[in-house]
Image (cartoon, rainbow, N blue to C red; front, side, top):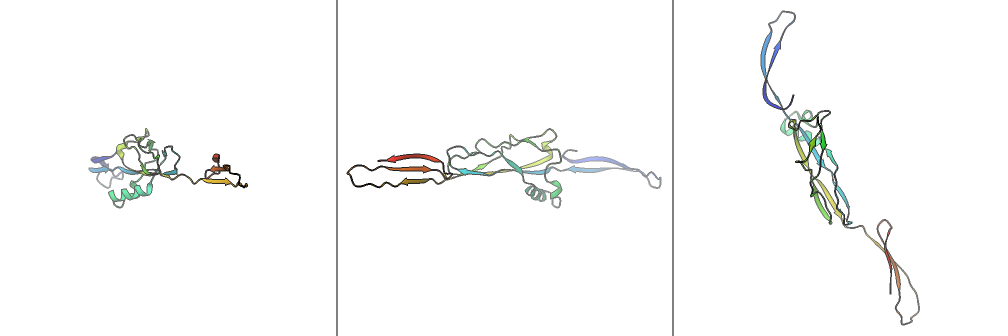
Length: 178
């Protein structure tokens, strides 16, 4: 049964032994939505001039239980998360969920573009979407190694050779200064 507000449901209780009278009545049933909390994942990288994005996301069941407990006191655990077989089909991030320069920016789920699988009725759930954080840190340190040169004074320019490497030891440039 899907989420509904105070639907009258008829029932009949019959005693097969014949000792009691058959009872027919109506009961009011309210089906409440379950709570799903989905969070965009965090990501970080050193600055390299390219956009940092992160499309991963995860279900935060503990947060869903807490939110459900606020909505339905005493029922948090039974009111949180998807029912088996139901779930998301696609959880995209917003177009501005990227960071290029050094700093941080929210990684935000595009709630209007989220889709659920064919077994899931969105009306049976309350969705809460939490942002992640995208962080671009300063570039990795570079090393500069200058090779010593020794010579006697000759009134001429002296050349010094050096190599610039990144943090992984890769050569970025090499040159000589005269």
